[in-house]
Every structure is written in structure tokens, then in C-alpha cells.
Length: 411
Image (cartoon, rainbow, N blue to C red; front, side, top):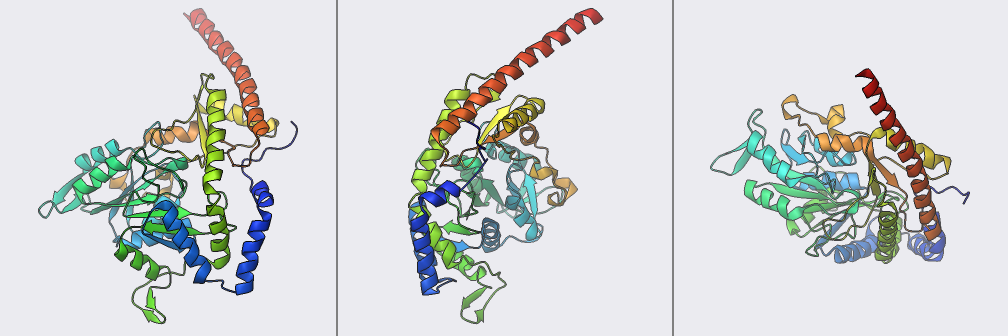
């Protein structure tokens, strides 16, 4: 096989569904219903039904969805939000946008999601209740701890039950960043998008449910929060020219809504294809001793990304180069943890060490997993990884033996 295998592509998806997509676009253009209106309303209704939430509030992006959620929950200046260091920047940057403080809690080494036990440990060590057990504050700064923002990283739901117990115990609200997990489910059958007070989605083109541009959505079962976000996404107005609070302009347009509504009908098929590819990777790569394949721990994993973990950064860099030589493209999620980004460290006394997440930045590697990958392409990727692994294992054994001999000579 000589052709290039891109890390991600929507070319085949577009080609296979071109007539459907063009018809949807034509319907919007003919109606000239570009902002709000029937196409957006229809998608919101269908999406809330798919997720099994009472309300879906569409917006311009996943980043805006996070901003809207934080604003609707009334995040105040200098409040603390406990969150993950291993995620796309928006899960923390929008906390900072509210002049609040993200505090990074390390992750579970198997799922890569925030570790509930470490949340509890931080709270017991760093925080205390005041005002008759109603308000949790940080001991050193006096800042209130407002909530927890967790991320369903790479398509697997977080251990929401354990996090919910913590939130109930300490009177904290919850936001679920489900931007990578549309269609995922927990062990007890709950859908990503229903695991918190508000859940947030991104419809960036590379997502499992991707638009032909930017798009996002919030889901909730709370009527008041839904009404707040409807106002906030449209300049803070309750009705035409009736502005009652500060808001932003963050509306999903009719074209994106129409495309998303068509893709929503195909989403389960797309996710099944991702799962099949992941299973092939797992089966083919399980015998390589310095590669750890991802595990499904909590329910249905929809594999927005498929990330293997190498023993060390040298092996990862070598594997990247060798695969590139065979025109197989890969990616790194993430080259930096969020706690290593200066502007997200808003207060020196809130700095928290996250060694598991920081180690992952040096050892994880994402393989292609878009739904339209052909079986032969996936097998070719596996074949080349095994060939490279065999070569790297031989060189590793030689290196270890050489070092062992040197040690004896030096003795």
C-alpha cells in the first residue's frame, strides 16, 4: 500500500453522503432561514432526544458551550473550579475567562479522566467548610470552591457516580465536558450529556458528530438553567429588544443545524465503525510489550481518539518517524498538560502537581480512527506498527545488553 493514510479525513464521509448533505444545504438556502428558526429547533429537539436530556441549547462552538454553562451556574470572580489537566484548553480557559481559578486534579492512569479519589484528597487537605457546612473554601486563599468540571476524554465517560457523590457531599455543581463523547454511555446506561447539571458538546468537524464549520450545544434537565443559556447565547435578551443581562452572540446557524441533523441519524453507525477499528487495534497490538492499548472501563467508549501509550518518549518519537516513513499519519494528545500553561496558573497557592498527566504527554500517541477507514488500511497500520515494534525491540534488547556489559567492565 503506497497511498497516504491521513490522521483524519471527512472526504469519504462527504462523498458517501453527498446527495443527502447537498439536499439539506439546498433546503436551508431556499428557505433563507439562516439564523435560528426551524432547522435549529429541529436539531435541538432531535439532539436532546438522542442524548436523553430535557433541553438542548445550541450555540456557536464547544468553547462557547462551556462559557455559557459556567455563566448560567453563576461562576463568580476568584471562585475555584476543580478540573482535569489532560484536555483541550477550552475546558480551563473558560474558567479563566470568568476571572475564576482552575485547580488541576490529576487523572486516572487507565481512563485518562479526572480521578475522583484525588478530588476528595485535595478537598480534605486544602479546603474546609464555613457557615454551618454550606460553603467550601480554600484554606490558604479563602477562595470559594464552586464546582467540578470533568471531561469525558477521548470518548469514554468519566466515573460520574463517584464525582456526583463528592459534589453532593461538598455542595458543588457539576459541568460535563462531553465534547469528545457524543454517543458514549456509562455502565448503568446513562448517556454522555446527562451526567452533570450542564453538559457541553462541540461539533467541530473532527468530532464524532461534526458540522461543516463550528458548532456547539449545552444539554440540561434543569428548566431555569436552560432558560438562562437561551438568553445568554443571544445577547442576554429575554425577548426582542428586552435585554436583561450581559450575554454573547453565540447562535448555531441553519446550515450547520441542517447538516448536524442529517449526521445525527448516522452517528451510531459512525461510532460503531470507530469501535470496530479500536477492537482491531487492540487485538493486533496486544502482543507488543512496550505498547499499552486503551481500555474500556466505563460503559460504551466511542473512541473520538485511539491513543496508545509507549514505554517512553524515545520509543514514541521513533514510532512516529517510522510510521511517517510509511505515510501513516499520527498525532499527540496532548503535548502539554493544562497545568503547564502559564496563564491558566492563576494563583501560586493553587498550584497542584499532576505527574500522571504530565507523563502521558511524553508517552501517548493517537492512531487514525475515523469511521471511513477501510479494513485493509487498519490492518496495514497494524502491520507496520508490528514491523516497527520488532525492529525497536531488537534495538532495545541490544541497547540493554550493551549497557549491562559496560556495567560489568566498569565494576
